[in-house]
Length: 220
Image (cartoon, rainbow, N blue to C red; front, side, top):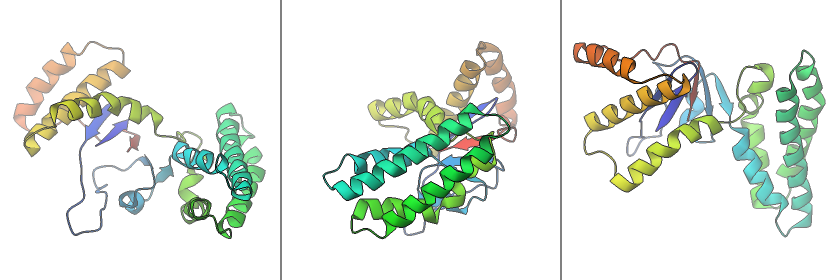
């Protein structure tokens, strides 16, 4: 399940087909995609890797028993956090200030890729192989560097699915996602949901779904 958001919120559900390489169908979405490292999202052209996922991996390495790997992991951790802080501080010179941080981050990855520590080597390769997506928010200051907001939006849906064992049909899944879209849009706009529910009641029987083309970000 994923959540698209900007001024509106939209929940959608997808899953890979058995026996086929998972892929994300982005024909209905032309905005930026903020994701973890799941390969299904690699087909989308405009993509930002969630830096929080990379930071969690770097924390685990920095707190490990291997001192050499721990030092490099700490280095990666500091540069990733500096990158977020520098862009968060904003200003016209933010992107310029990020240049030395990006250079240090890439150097740390190149060093980490040559170590024998499997997790550090994997993290360094992951960052280097997906470099453009990792640093997309630096080149595009309006992008969020993490998908934390969408994960908070999805939290209640995930808990409900766990205690209710989900839906029984694809129609039920679509209805569930549509209702969540309405509720979270109203919550984000601090608006009453009754008017929007009435609008949906008038449109959905005619086969007109709430517009998904105004969304600027899709967070997965």
